[in-house]
Length: 160
Image (cartoon, rainbow, N blue to C red; front, side, top):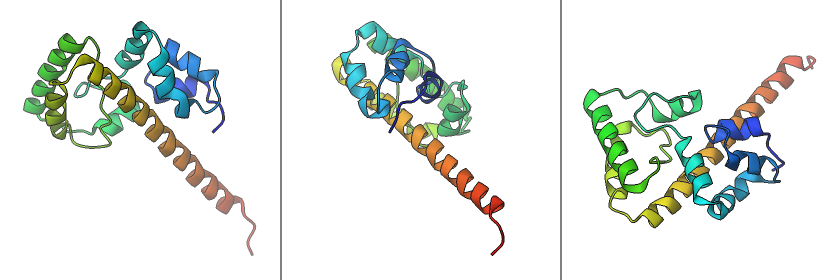
């Protein structure tokens, strides 16, 4: 994989941060992202994690909205809000999970379980989850481009 622009990386990681700026200077940034995050000062790691939307809140990006789905049960949303607040109070950063199009209600037990972990365990997991989300977004984007290019080829092809 070649380099990605800062704008492409900001879209994959939910915002322009010092982390995404560092990645933009690297070859194969998504393959190196977890190692880069682990090497950064904690302040920069937290900046990257906190750029991600809270699960259950209205996502800022269309990618996050599609991933989180449209389950709007008020009880689910209220429980997620309470669990998000507890998580942030305990660990000092946002809960990051690779939702992978699961309903929000299926994330509640994941969040409850992760609240039982140590901060070190949770920071390591959050880094891995953040990178997994970005890699999947990139994969879907590239897959979409490939389909578009195939369609463009068919449209422009001369009849046989």
